Image 1 (tube, helix red, strand yellow):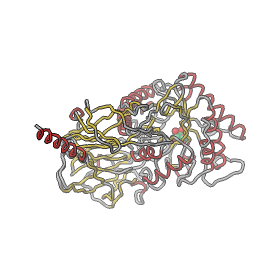
Image 2: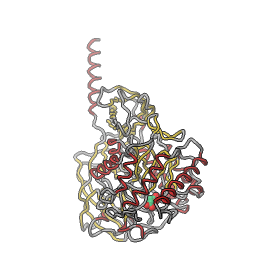
Image 3: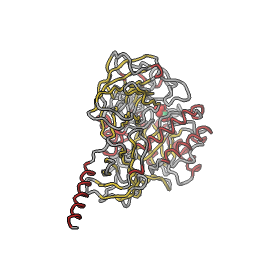
Image 4: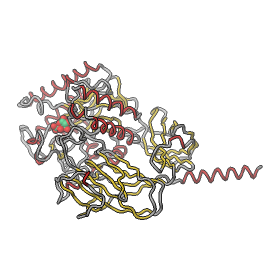
Length: 587
Ligand code: ADA
């Protein structure tokens, strides 16, 4: 009897040891120099996996910023080989953001296509044998004036072809395996979280959520506890938890291991961000959002921003005294959010858009793509405590029935992922606004005396009074229309300047003019009773449309010049003015 008990204990310990050392889904990085050819003017339909390579191209990277292909439009053809030491029952190819459309082949077999520019995408490969494999991709960067296009030619940011943040294979080791663990905050006061296990069948990637009934869960490297899961979900409290905030960005780690189903780890934070009583609330206290809009782009590398360049930008943003960044106007990379988790910044992320019109918003394919991007963005970012707002379609025609219908669908799609995040969009439609009924807060973009009321900036006094009067009027419209509960923020305010160009009396486009402009609008935002946040347009100058586009005369060298920093991140006077207002923080 005694021996039997001893054997049982030993067996249990052995199982536990096995479970605790279970490796989980393995990642194989496929970044590097790939074979390349460019088919100018050609479409994905004409692309083939066995193309004749004429060059090589780095992944990640935007091919249309590389000499030979600079600003050309067509399809970039990529290919590389990789070797597997062992066969696997299934794998997923992860593409961490691409533009603008893509087709993929593995060993000559098509494994997927996508038009979800900027999204973090995965494609099933099926079982893979040990040995050599060939992966090929076609990336089309052509622009069309067609209603089903996610990237319209008139958007005020450059359209670029390439792999933005790299490619990896996620190799499943077991026929049914835990792929990821998602951590949803349930109660920030007690550190209560819900774990969702994403368990997959290797062969086709379908969900097997209910396969895992019991798992070993450990937080922050502590002792594992046995937890029962129902339909892949279980609630528990994080031991000795510390809250995440921009000032104290504490992070926790969870490891889940289940016998026969492998293991997965996740980093997360305990926090709550909500809207109510006319304010934003972080962990139960009101928070005023002070920040910038940022394009995830560099002059030289386009959207293929590196970790160091993102980190440099985040240091500059934090250095302004900001607590907030809006990822204008498309979903951020996973890497960017990880860095925001670490450095402590509240992030507004959004699905791609820019002044979309009723014809686009009633196009079934456009609607389907937008909804798919919304689901993907909200779900794939659940573990990032920095991601606190989900948004969509910057400045779409929210005065139209089509806009209102699509907005309602987008709000539902984003809320359905159960992230706990407030949802909204940035509007520029003011009194005619129709689509804000279901949003959690109001964000409006306004450029009085710059894009609107042109000619009212003639004196320092008229600039100041116009800016303050218009912001107040618009804030009041929203307050009256939507009542006292929804917080109101300024999604964008700003104007343009040339780095290094000065004028003692603040001529338009001088650094002085921009600094004076933002001193007025940001000061108004901080002091106004209704405004609960402000995001300056924009963090740094950025590439926009190149030789055409509606406002082309205001895009010198193809750039939008509204940055607090220039495109090389050199500080303008406006950055100093904003820092002065953000740092002492009245609210
Ligand atoms: C808009 C838009 C921004 C940018 C800005 C500008 O409001 O949302 O993306 O284009 O104006 O610089 O004109």
